[in-house]
Image (spheres, rainbow, N blue to C red):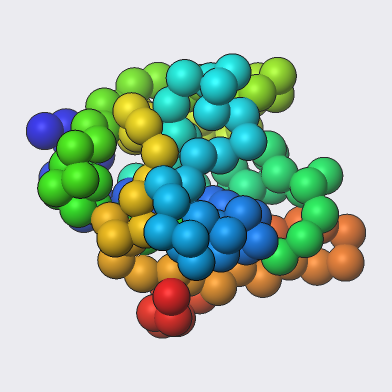
Length: 141
């Protein structure tokens, strides 16, 4: 257990809506597009850092995005371990954003089983691809 785990009970993963829905609808484990290159699934425990992460890594990726909310235990109940480590690149993009050195980030050692997700949160973006907000009150799956 890490300090981040004690301070923030949830893990969050930003996901392209169409990729998540395809995995969920076929009851397949979801793997992000950079999983093979990165060797794990990126997540964020501190919700205050979500928009920094999104705007650093994903503004150039078009489409609708969602935010998956889960816990270390919900993943572990499906055999998926999580470790907290320093920031890491997403694909070829280096982690040079505000807050990247301030805490450890959860790295999910596998994909995300749909049943491990406790909530799917809406994500708002503007026309330029900037991430504006995550709807923490939205519990739709």
